Amino acid sequence: EECRAIFSQAIGENRTYLMEHECKEILESMGIATTGFLVAGSEDEAVEMSNKLGYPVVLKIVSPDVVHKTDSGGVKLNLADEDAVRAAYGEIVGAFKYQHIIGVAVQKMADPGVEAIIGVTRDPNFGPVLMFGLGGIFVEVLKDVTFRVLPVTLQDIDEMIQEIKGYPLLKGYRGKAVDIDALKNLLLKISELVLTFPEIRELDLNPVFLYPRGNMTVDARMFVS
Ligand code: ADP
Ligand code: MG
Image (cartoon, protein in one colour):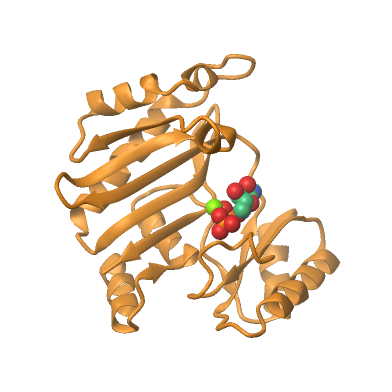
């Protein structure tokens, strides 16, 4: 089906890196909420898409050569109107003029939430390993992440969520509790995805915004082979 087509296109082009819009198309096909996979090929098209989505929007570089989009000026957040979209489009295309650009992704600016990260790697001995943690300083400074070898049960996922140090944040310490059931469901779907497609060598959702109701995957990348 459509996931296989995306994998075989990448592998056919000798690419191991799946771009954000490709990953999000795969995730959406699994019923995972993302900020979408629209890609504009021109400034006018970016404006047209933005008008349809409604403001504020986000523009991001789409290139098989750019894995860390923010580092090189490839992410423009919170664009309030058509003028801002035109300016951001020009800046992105200008910043990457010596690289192979597929286009510019156009997304709605997601509401802020509790930031989480979800990853999968394949260990040569243990096979696929699922990682979950909270984003920002929790992962960067505190290394507050937890791992399980796949497949996982709902019980395993429960334990993963409860054993991170940031768990009180999920339960609503100084704020509203996030939707734990939706988070569990997302972790289960990611496990299912990786077990279904051996092509996925590595997967990284960073960040996922967790809300009192549901969640939103804001960025995704995969490595395939
Ligand atoms: P990269 O990780 O490749 O640098 P991201 O797509 O993760 O790029 O974007 C960088 C940051 O910008 C994210 O961590 C998130 O905080 C913010 N961001 C990106 N896309 C959106 C969006 N659609 N809505 C809200 N915030 C976003
Ligand atoms: Mg990211």
